[in-house]
Image (cartoon, rainbow, N blue to C red):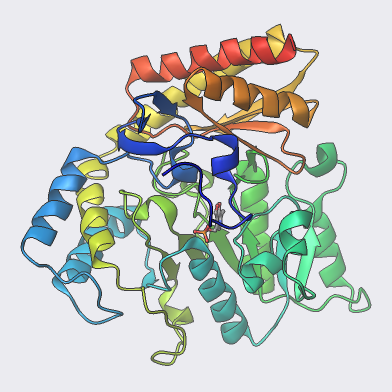
Length: 416
Ligand code: PLP
């Protein structure tokens, strides 16, 4: 089969990477004609442990080989029990986190919808505070708290019940969103009622790799606690070790009321999502929120195997943090060398962004990288940021190889 003939115009990645991928191992994807690409995209952070990790694959094949239940809505299954036991023991207990676990349906946006619904149900309030540059998913509730105009435009109806505020550093830090929020809530004539929740990414991924400072996150958490507003952290892209610790909010020392997880929670690229919340918030009626594919047992099996393999100790976390220093240095060099084109670089752990003055330059860099065998995507409000998301398990030599290709690609793109 050649190029898709019946696939909708809505397709996107296949336009920028017009090859047919056939196999994938670790940090590499191989096309049907044998071209090898280093994958610094990692399924938009759904593949933090790389493609087809052998330990996870073995667990999956063994499970399928014994006719383990694959689909089960939210029935009790061995695979679900095993996942919940691992999650409690390896993720929640060591971090002293007391969360209930909801399986909201298999995608990130399912997790966000559940979080928003629950926050509104618990508080009896409707408005949710969301930030400039935020991305929370494409279904209507998630889209209402998303910032991007093109994505919002696709809704076809008004997206409401959202109070938009500047994210940390928005417009060069000219406006402090948290001061605005606090000050307006102090004044009963401000026109703004107390919101149900605030939803935030600790590092905005689609928004252009914008890390919030720990101080800003702490201030936000304190403000929410003081005002009785629920704090939702959307850790869908930045969770599961992407910034170093399992949860991206750990380094700020905050404890959200509700957490959204998806993408790399299954560890294998299989659809799976969780919504976590404090036990007191568990006011759902049985079946009040559900979804046919919330019991994806194949994903539970690889998720449990991933927790055992990568989260039994702090090795992966430390390694990711150390590698962050390498990226910071290499991107800093690039920014200095091409100061006329690069605005800045930023990131944490193994999520990094290189911001260009012109979106066209970022596009050319991604295209030059593709031509040289490296997959990277652009993000940001103007698509002006090259986003780097290598699998956390990428060997050192492949990380260096990817950064070398990026260096050549920037040189080629600016020489254009
Ligand atoms: N939230 C964040 C922070 C995301 O990055 C994404 C996807 O990129 C989503 C939500 C939506 O997840 P999904 O595409 O699985 O619905």
